[in-house]
Image 1 (cartoon, rainbow, N blue to C red):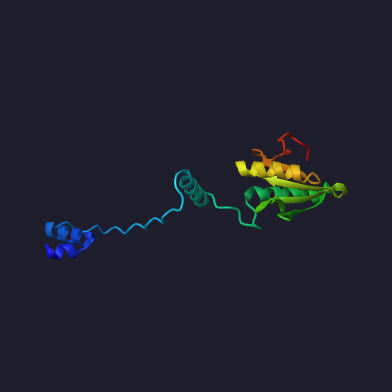
Image 2: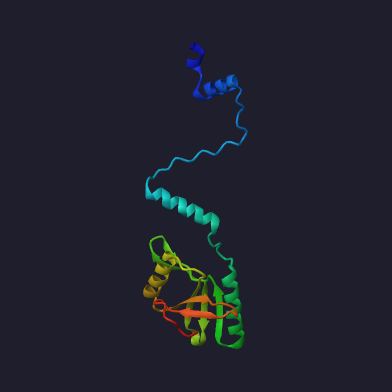
Length: 168
């Protein structure tokens, strides 16, 4: 009994399994979970955010996704036709609050050098809607437009901050 008191519980279980002829599990050990500093719904939100990053990675600055590439081609055709003066991808960053910014996808220079900010989205999340509306209120000098790609053949829908249809 003296020897058993000096063994850890893992060693004791291993010895008992050997005595009974039970083979050890050869599966790789699972990584230990990091202790969480928060509890309750905060943990659930952190898990949801982590899963969202795995399933749908965040946007990499300076790189266009599929919708942005298609809209860039649309803007370039408008520029060549003389409907707009020019456009730039991710050219401006608007400060909305401390540590909160709005980065519109496209800065479009319309005729008469009027500046427009175009935001392309396939799906609108709550934070994106909030930033879009807040930027529209805080920066009235820009015409901020939400752009959505409609079904094939590719057409575009343009809406203002109240999500009302606007002309291109």
